[in-house]
Image (cartoon, rainbow, N blue to C red):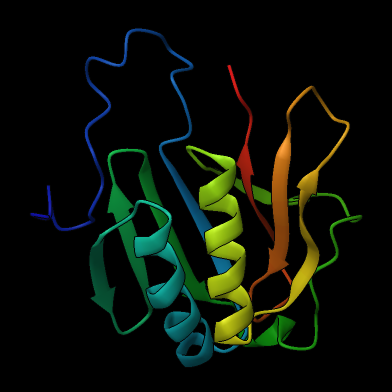
Length: 148
């Protein structure tokens, strides 16, 4: 995939509406090297094959937008993520099928990633099928399939 510009950001023109989706997400991390390794493994599997690397962080991009990590300010090195604090609770990525969720969960397990809740159907809405896991700092992530 060709980098669209130096930041790796896909265009927003032609989206049709003001709220056409999330363009990018930036996550602060405590250990840049550890998180870079985790997300370098994760993001291509979730549809973000392009990568932009720089000393202060990294970003992965694809048709859905871009996802970035950067090192947190050292003043906050002792802080830990909690999904129950004000701010971010979790980030959920789309899966095309239940089989994709199951295969991805097997890859997570083989990689040693921390799985919070294994793949199963949840009662949020009919057919909601997901696996929940964390990044190295404990940020809650999810891969979800919801049928039409």
